[in-house]
Length: 147
Image (cartoon, rainbow, N blue to C red; front, side, top):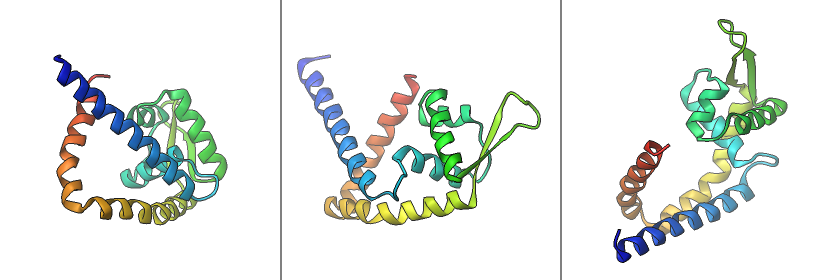
């Protein structure tokens, strides 16, 4: 990789990491009390798939360890946001589903973060956001393939 390409790559990842940190900080401040971004992410995923998932499947989706996912799921279960039951076909596995309270908490979180996200997109302009999405999506796919 040439010096210019290396500097470009470093600048790209520096901007992404900084933007990620700033966005996480903003979203954390407006999420409902006690909800973390990881909690919202899992609830949002479960609401969108409308089906049960195993903790291992969820860990794979979010690219975290099974231990980290178990920790998140334990907190969500304690809050009443998910139901965790044994897998009827394999007692060693568990199945996770979003509860009605979890759907309500997810909806409240979306209502809380929507103004923040809408404001940022509005300032950037929808055309610029549409233009950058394919690049970010391709970057994500390439990084996923490297796992």
